[in-house]
Image (tube, rainbow, N blue to C red; front, side, top):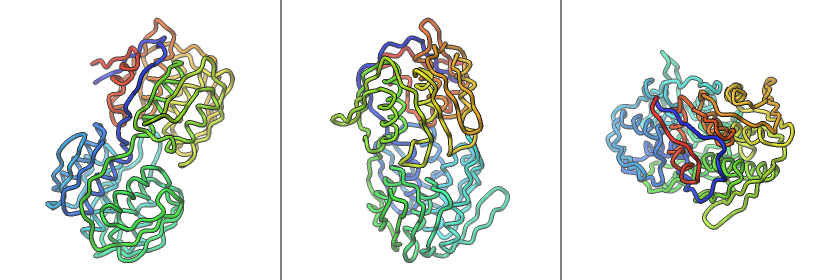
Length: 419
């Protein structure tokens, strides 16, 4: 198993970093290939474990998947309409195959994904929407089995905005008969990117990126070629890295409009963040103001940036408050940060972060994807002469493409080691 070691006292990060394609856009786009009968080509695909897992899910169904940065997915030979437990258990986004399979083939059998370390993430809204479109749903032996000769349009009011739920239902509705309206839809940029792909395929999707999405079903869809948007969470992580080290970093390929809430908080803290040709430039500050952060569905502050901003708050002059409203168990990085001499108290869904702490490197354990990134950031600003060793970085490899190489290029003393 690998670990990441980071030398404390990192000098100001300098230079430019290319932001990889968005994992949370790539996964639904790969699943959307099931809606067509030919070969789809996706560019700017991140080289991540989750992407490889989604490729295996489609290959288990009979699809032909090839390439890496440019991924080609041919679905003309699909002969098994099942996403098995052994693959779904490692990545819950595999459930995104449910909507396309039912829409195109009339049936699907997909393992229930269950919860994960950061909290339960049920798929009840996915099933509610498919039922509204006429699907018969049964749950048996840990699998969702859905059937419908042809889905029909309907009105779906989501109880909560759900990104994967909105995506699954958009894909299903693209081949349904008639008009489908999804109310209280997720508004994330990744939802918009999926809509662009579906429309390229010949679908009629309107309103993606707003709380109401309308889809006029069509009889068939055709293969496409599409370049995936930049990963806004990877970009946000490097923005924090540049800020807390007092650096000056250009993030290439990312869009400021995808990071409005994160940019706002970094500016409130004292960092300088500006749109630049081809990306975003971030310059740090000698001192940071404390923050009050509440995670919200997009366009609010993203839960996937909560842990990273908590590290900045550890360096701020004063007390910061962070309230997590999305997941009930997303403070598992707090004990590890406290082991590094942070002073963070958790009361229910609120974390009180006492700033002006000189963090100290030590051995820490990653509990989930974003916690892994936060511990690496903490290692950068730990006291000079100390070393942070982040264990269980297989979480990190699910969502960050060679983060240690990118940080090393900017001047960090960081490396991957075998344990």
